[in-house]
Length: 364
Image (cartoon, helix red, strand yellow):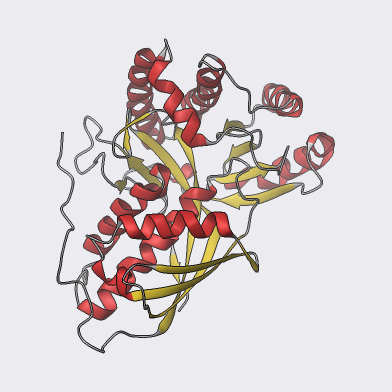
């Protein structure tokens, strides 16, 4: 197993009265896992490797204003969608405090954070991935600006990915664009349990512009958090077999995506989605995150694919919403399918037309 990078650096602190004030804004996207990770070891280490598509339109945009603090620890105000959010505030302050040996300068600053999403929070669209990755990028950006480190893009993104993982496991994949592996993977040099690793080279062109229509069955906050669900894998009787299956599926999926094999891509991604929810249903205590309309949509996807022969498939995250995956070349046919056959099963928020993206973007 590879070792975790040691980023502890006591020199990353401001001296004397040279504590700055300013503002940084980043956007960082959500991602959708194709091979899922469900179950982890301390500290934020996955029980099996996973691979995801980074999305383009589903992102968090976060403005971080900073000024000298007075208390000797991170001071925090957090606003989400324009409203002060004490829950996010406490979570972010705890996250920053945990990073004080890596970024000692956080203890010298007061942060006012204003964040917004382009998609519903906590509905199973990996909002923690975009939210935590954007904070990691801001902190690494501050280190680069004020201390002259992380000048090479590889070093910058690797540290941001490592830090993001400490806040939310799947966030480490959102630091990169395209297809990203998290977890040490046989036959893929450079992969790690500690940070994400992009694997876009050699992928067939049919997957380069892949689309993801996020069908919002229920845009409300899910009743069981992913953190709780991961913990229940520690006692799940099928856990060991699941972890082995995921490793095998990842190898087969990469092979299929290099060959342009959409049939194998469909079989593996749909099986992974259903297995994820099977693990929830076989935990103790068991729980359900899918809804009746989730199943109605899946049945119609099966029927549409059989009738048309088009390579349309689905995946699910840890929630009821359906990610409809398909090549860019058949976008018009799929949009008609959604509008004609699937709209009655969606929430009033409808659906988000998304696609594979290039990764985070600095705004200011």
